[in-house]
Image 1 (cartoon, rainbow, N blue to C red):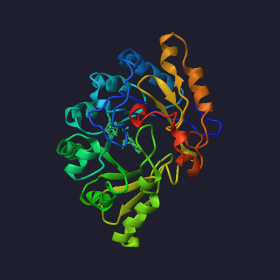
Image 2 (cartoon, rainbow, N blue to C red; image 1 turned 90 degrees about the vertical axis):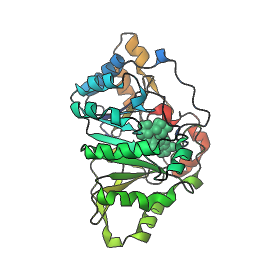
Image 3 (cartoon, helix red, strand yellow; image 1 turned 60 degrees about the vertical axis):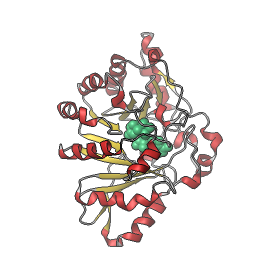
Image 4 (spheres, rainbow, N blue to C red; image 1 turned 180 degrees about the vertical axis):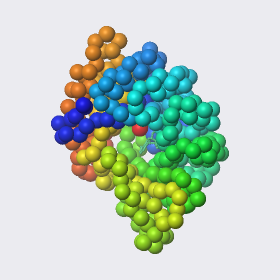
Length: 329
Ligand code: SAM
Ligand code: SF4
């Protein structure tokens, strides 16, 4: 069992398949892009399978594929197939630009939980945020996934003055549709020009909801163990909404996550400056298990050591971290 020094058991592995993406979300990717790793430095499909199998033997029960955009990888189907043969719950985070091409595979491979990025319901705004013109495609693909019975969560990163006027419109989408809307506090990563004034806090989101809906109509739903979100439902609505407040109210105490970047490094926390190179060791024919155990043991109690809001707000503390696109959110 991958247990850290605070007794947290790590059963959830997030694997980034690529640093590439067919969108350019401005909160995720710096305007000039990022220097991409050479292909030979990235894990191939067999290496992903081999590293994932080691994690599963060590107790991982859930794997989520992310990126970059995992579905831009030409061998994404092959990777999904290999990982689906492991005894784990397999899930994916995607921007849904191409999910229509993968519906049958998802079904065949038992991939049920699909998280989709969507930060606005306004096509022109979508173009500004993502620097690409795919709103219609993404929007129709979301409803196609719902029609096929997938469990769809929408991840919406809120930024002040950019899309915080859409909180209620997003929640209203869950009235007739079994959609789970998750508002994510904007987080700082290398090159995304984060500052506290752009943040829409958990409290601000709740205030906005309470201004529109009666208090009794806003139901707090029980969170599942290791949930990173605080979950709510409007009375009579089919879907739900949730808040992921990594900045103002982190959920590190129950963290069960570990991340594997596309170039085979583990990050024991989204915000950790340190990484552990599994890929070189695997390629050298040695066991990666001791490295994994050591990385878990070295995990900080909270946000890679930035345990207070003051530390988190200090740009110097984030200098060592990668852009989100290169971590795998
Ligand atoms: N391309 C896929 C997608 O967009 O869902 C998977 C990768 S993306 C990096 C994973 C998640 O990270 C997305 O939900 C995205 O909104 C979130 N994310 C990226 N940058 C972020 C930031 N600065 N603050 C909060 N969430 C962020
Ligand atoms: Fe691409 Fe996802 Fe990052 Fe947007 S959030 S740029 S879709 S990886």
